[in-house]
Image (tube, rainbow, N blue to C red; front, side):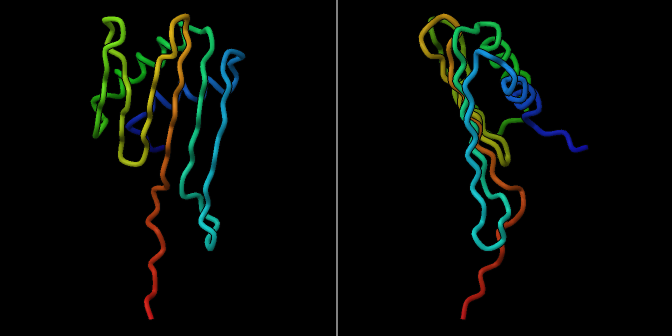
Amino acid sequence: MEMSAQQNILAVVKKCETSESVEMSVIRKRNEDTKQLERSITSITIKSNPALVDEFIAAFKQDEPNATQVIDTYVKGKLVPQLYRFSNVSVSFSLQGSGGNASVTVIEKSKSKPAAVIKK
């Protein structure tokens, strides 16, 4: 099984699927011709769960060495991830006030190369 550069973040995303303090939506875009998945966008809203918010922050820090782009920001004197980009995945994180509220967006692009366009 291939290890992904953002494995810790995606493990916390997976955990969110069964959490009652989380609202989650997934959008999938497929190629019209091949029906292959081109992009998946997962939006997560965390409500009143400081432990889960802290778990996300820790996962970002664990995956940081594998990121190709890192944007962190200071919020109330605490360094918080804002955007981490990996080869085919971008993950944004935003604290929403206080009390363990946050939003996370994961955009995953297909690893396969797009079909060649034949020019006439």
